[in-house]
Length: 370
Image (cartoon, rainbow, N blue to C red):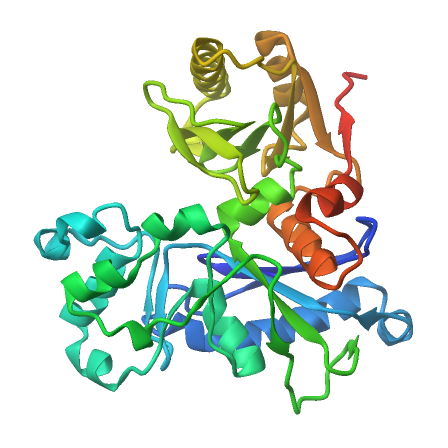
């Protein structure tokens, strides 16, 4: 399941990538300061929605949930009482409080904002979570922080950052990797789906990380276009690559990197403007790859809200001169959930790596203009 800004999305996905059921549960008050307190109820409603999506109780009764994998948007910060400081909230009021050693952190400004704006809540807080980890805490009673890969630490925090900011390090749960078994799902509710005894809850991670897993962008040379209200072109490489307007971050796979080009307002653009922006982004990535001596791919996978726009796919293929790959399973566009499935089945031991899980679960096919 994936926690978004306005809804929780969930899917039942088999070990070979079959999407058995999908549902989206909107939050009743998505902008409420304590919206995280509604996530467990959204989880329960999602379980009901998944059962209904299978055709009712008889069909649902034939299914057993082997594990739960949780991801969500970030950098969102949630206190143990559910106060939620969202990923997109302004932190300008504390910018001068961020020491030089913490300038790379995406979370420190959010944490300092909570301390400054909500001092009474801060005094009572015993734990601070990133978004999806709060729901994991509610489901299991265990506190963790998902660090997708060791190189992400600079974007999170370390002891030096916390000391410089006057933040007690016991407020922040220890780091675990994507696919870590965070504990057993505990519920006294009568649920619409059957869960295995001692059903494990696995660490998914930030939504952009699991989305890349869910598009199979885990091998050097893979290119993905994750499109929606915003759009990101992501190129997996075996070395850091620099270029104007490009951002390079670690991959969830050790030794690999993700080079991205962001189109923040893609959903508001006309089709021609959108195509121009994508063409420019691919051009920037190609130029940076050539400068670094890296071969650039001739195909690109797509996922997200624009994936089923047949005309747009046709125009992208023609404009870019590239083969376009899209999800094969009924054009299932929610790559975050497929990434969660990869983490879950890897965590269960069905696969020996995230990459091997993605090779089986993420099924892409070439878009053909019929």
